[in-house]
Amino acid sequence: MTRTTPKQAPATETGRTDLGRRIATRRAELGLTREQVGQRCGADASYIAYLEERSANPGSGSLVRLADALETTVAELTGATTEEPPGRASARSDAELVDMSDAECRRLLSTHGIGRIAVFTPEGPGIFPVNYVVAGNDIAFRTSGAALLARAAGTEVAFEVDHIDDATRQGWSVLAVGRVVGVTDGAAVRRLDAVARSLPWAGGNRTHWMSITPTRITGRRVVHR
Image 1 (tube, helix red, strand yellow):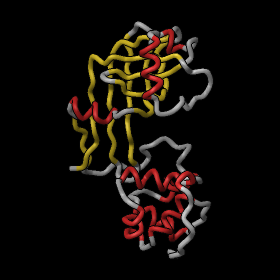
Image 2: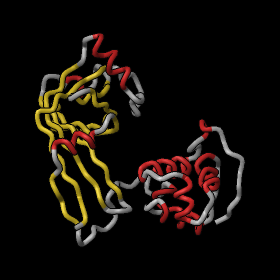
Image 3: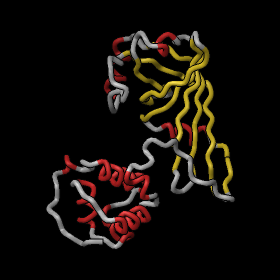
Image 4: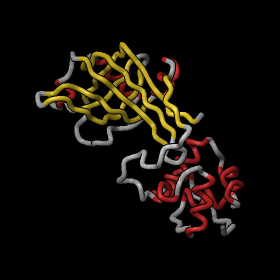
C-alpha cells in the first residue's frame, strides 16, 4: 500500500466520498483509531485519513488489506452490496441464537437509529421503517399527520430494530411491543425536537411525533460458540 503523506483535510470533509464514509463508519464501529487501522493493513495513519477525507481510488490490493483490517469485505466497503439485503453470507457451523436480558435490549436500542414499526391498517398488517429516538422509556418517531402510522394512534404496535454484520455473520434484534399515541403536548414536542439527531430520511413534511411506551421488550442475538 502506498505510504504517501497528503495534506490533512479539514474535519468537516471527513468521509466526503461514499468510500470514505464507509471506512470511517466501520472504523468507528470497531472502536479503532486511524493509527490502529494503519497498523493492521501496513499503512500510515495519514493514508487512512486521506482515504476517509479525500476522493481516492485505491487499488484492489489496498482495498483487500483495508477490508481485512476493518473486519469486513471489499464489496461492503465499496458499496457493491448496497442494493442487497443483509445476511447473505453463509452461516457458521458454531452459530447459536441466545436470548438477551432486558437491560441489554434497552442498551442496544441506544438513543436513535432506524427501526421498523408493525401496525394494522385497513388493507391488513403493515411494516414501516422509521427514524426513531429513545426518550426516557419511550420510543418516538416522526411521520406525516395524514399517514397510516398517524391513524394507528391508540393501538398496540410492534417496534423492531436490528443489526446484521455480514463480515462476522453475527447480529441481534430487539422487539418492543406497546401502545402508540400521537404527541400533542407542546412541551413534549419541543423536548423530542431537541433530542432528535437527524431529520427523517424519507423527507417530506414529517413533523408529527408519535410515541410508543413498551410493555414488553425482548431480544435475541446470534453468537458463535
